[in-house]
Image 1 (cartoon, rainbow, N blue to C red):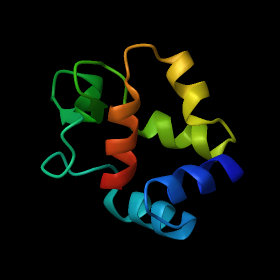
Image 2: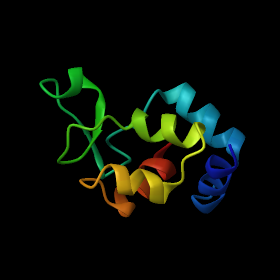
Image 3: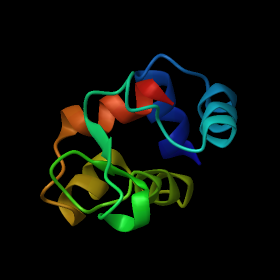
Length: 91
């Protein structure tokens, strides 16, 4: 929870803002987030990090479980820090 709070603050959001916006929107709107895309043939049409098959919701699940952005980036090498921060800002 602390990691999500710090990430949300870094992205200019409060924890409540980040969580409520994510739940309200489901995932970032591709038109406002240049780092994600939605392709019907990939990940069942879920929002994924651009150029990957990794659903964006995985980021939020890890952060809510206590992981840091650095942890996430270490686990998913195909995703960049810029993509993560873009997704957080879009949500």
